[in-house]
Image (cartoon, rainbow over all chains, first blue to last red):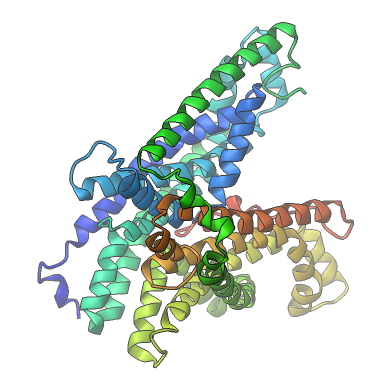
Length: 224
Length: 294
């Protein structure tokens, strides 16, 4: 039943490795971008707040598929942006990371903003009474606590991101979903085995993430 | 206005905020200028690429409106099937009988962990092998199958979280007046849980609508996004048509999101609600986790 795996025709581990890489790069990118967005959305400068709000509402309501296809057709093929060049494969990978980061950043931003709301007002007041500036209050007092409070929601964002990387198949990035599409077409007689393998792969990717980060969230939660 | 993070600005802070605004505006302007000049270099700003959306009715009647309708159709069918199925699964997961609870739990956790795109691809292959669905109908069937399997599992979690969010006094009171388990669920818990989870359910509808776009790019479903290539092929305006399609998606989803938040406000005010609400993001991260943010 699983003999098609021995043929060496399919690079199963390679495809899942691309999925993992997509996830890790986009996770790092969206964590940074989401924090910047959250900082804008709570800042005292009205223009930055407006930009943050508009960005989050627009991007969150756009299907990820539209963003990824837009990056490929619009940025790359029409405007000729190659993000540092390289082979077709490298460019597709980077475009996918760009779109995933732009998209996931909005969810990180919203999670962080709800985390900022869990910090008691008294703490920020005390920090201000010491003469700290907005930037100092945010980075020294509020964000460190907010991050600890939102590890749970951020885990959900990370797991959703892992699953969302499959959308990169739409622009031909050789990750798990694209390989599955190919294998389903070629190995129609082993349909359930193929689906089972990929399903198992995603369970193996997301289950430990959930368990480990769930444990971390409990360990670092701010006791109030 | 005051916030946790900063005082009401005095004259000095106001001046500083103006300065920051100006700097930010310059940065934003530079970014915009770069985008526009890059687009102008590739002739993407020419009037004839954008005016067809206003002057040429055919672009709407041939592509955009049929695309929107197909998107809504796939989304609506999936919602209509996934909602009752999800409700049943959610209640099944809360069952006192292990032989119901455990298989339903396994089903829900499994389908929550699999990317919806893979479910669509699998569905499509299933219809090829085991049914005589015609090849024109197959993409719609496959997309709906994928959406239903994934979203029913997510909705099951929402329903479960909705029921669990109710104060335990509700069950106690129902028991005290002699209701059976089934009666407690049907007459006491579910009606109240519905109000708590309505906002989360409407947000999930946005997810379903967004996910239909996957069918366009990988399964040849003639939905809105798949029209981009065809419009661009006729008017050679890739960016303009992508922007237009994004605007239509945003408008549909924004309408749903706004409806959800209005609903939440009304429910919070109404006396019938227990005040409990289910937050999509807060639903426990199991193997699946992240109640679908595609």
